Image (tube, rainbow, N blue to C red; front, side, top):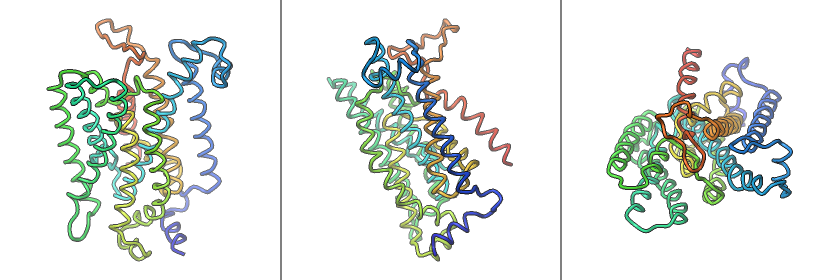
Length: 363
């Protein structure tokens, strides 16, 4: 009965509420688009290949050793990390926007992304004065990012908490302040850094350069925890969208439910940032795009937002790998990994104007 009441309340205008058939069709189209982009990702690059060559390399029968290296060791892990990280960031933003009832809520604006970036940068700074090996950094930097994101999310919640609980408006305002404070600390560390400057800047902007299967193995356990947790809190998140009073009438403890949903969102965002760095706008833009397609019911919104986030980040990293600035001879932007522009630059350059257009179109 409670679930029925929540579903009816969320369908505030039945004309805009998508049917189950339309939702399945939308998800299928998004999934197909993601699959096509993943194939293009494996095909395109400094050594482009046909679909036949990609398939042969995937099944272990490459025509040349270079094909196996390009597909299995370079492109496939990056494509999987881009898809997984984009899905985690976008679904995290969907939870935050719904529970906090604020269209500006996102991992970056509530402090989680700046906290995760600070954790990664802190590890890189500590490593600059030690003899840490690359393998140690590959392990410690993602772990530092996850710890930093979880710490920032917990700090925002604790600072927002009062006797009556942590209301959504206070959470947003506290998150903005904490995000600015953590970003200032990161900027200070960048100024005093003696080494790893390029890696630090790429963490600030967001990049998948030099990422490998090893990084994906650090991210998968976080996703394995976050995905079931996210699925479990969807009913509570749907109830909280209706307001604390309505959620309480439906039998929930609003403060406890909000803490659980935000915890799932923080784990999702931290796991994504632990690999890709401070990707801008995706956690805010993805849920808005999904909401225009499937409505605000989290049972539909979260899967659609995850697919859209994966599509956007895979497409952006594909552009980052293939885009060239050779026509600007004064810019030495090429890196050893072949990624000339950090993927976060593409999401910001494309996301900001599109988001402004979307907001103007809906006003």
